[in-house]
Image (tube, rainbow, N blue to C red; front, side):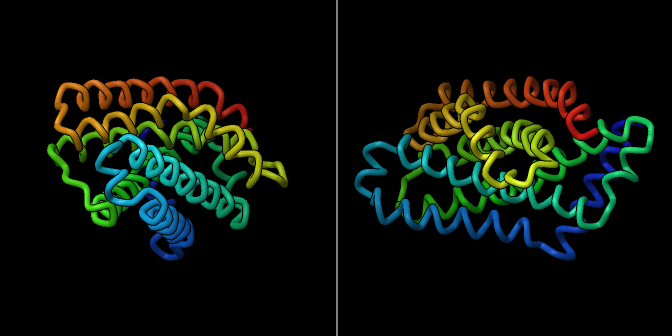
Length: 222
């Protein structure tokens, strides 16, 4: 029952994003701008010599994009006065948190794949293991939303949440950022074992973050 309600929340979020894609547009726009600036600052030669640097900057950009999209998703709940109606249902807070994580994961997957492709294109990177790079990208898209959603929920009723959420979420996401950056760099350089190991770590951090979020997030939302 809880999963069904969570999926209903996620489905409603995705429909809202489809009707008014301001969160997705903000995430894609910010990621594209930061990746473009990265390509000017780092350049193809430096990126080829140290792909971990390029991948690290990419995942920082994707994290900031995820924060924008998830914050906008909660803002939409407040604007439509839909938050209280969801919370009145049994297990409503749990379903709201989990549904937001599911929707954000789907959106971040699209943004991550697009951002990774743009980085490879602009920096002219030769990817030795494109399939592994795709897996690491999916792992990163799984690992980031639970933590970001938790901190957005904690700061939901703060006026300065646009400032508070990045200050709280980015330091907490350091393990995920390191794993995603190192895994992507391993895929680019042809280290299959390394990319798989980092991808496994991303999945593990996603599970731990989701469990922690389900423990703390619903109480913060209520």
